[in-house]
Image 1 (tube, helix red, strand yellow):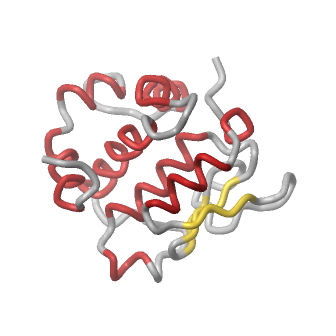
Image 2: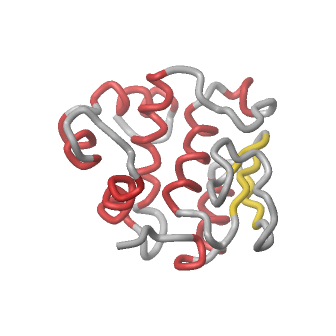
Length: 152
């Protein structure tokens, strides 16, 4: 099973979702390098309040980079370029929020996103993304609540 990619869900709903959170989504042309991509290849990139993706970018990658921007302190957002990770706690909150945001994208949803995260190789100490999300993510959830992206 391959992971969902931007070509599978389109850019319109993703652009609207990111816009609701004060972020911009820029579509990069096929064959062009993705600006601000930490991992390169088809992985999404970020520079300031902008997330960059191509049609072959995995949806989980787009949501991950957007979530990085959302959970980081506002004063860092405008100056971030490529490497968004500040701490393990922030990385965990990013993983948590990307799963939550997946429910706001038609044709994606949290369940599919967690499957894609496992397929892609995200690793959690309980083995699967679902096990982590349901049983071991209390600190990540608290971080996301404190950042104001979900209700307590």
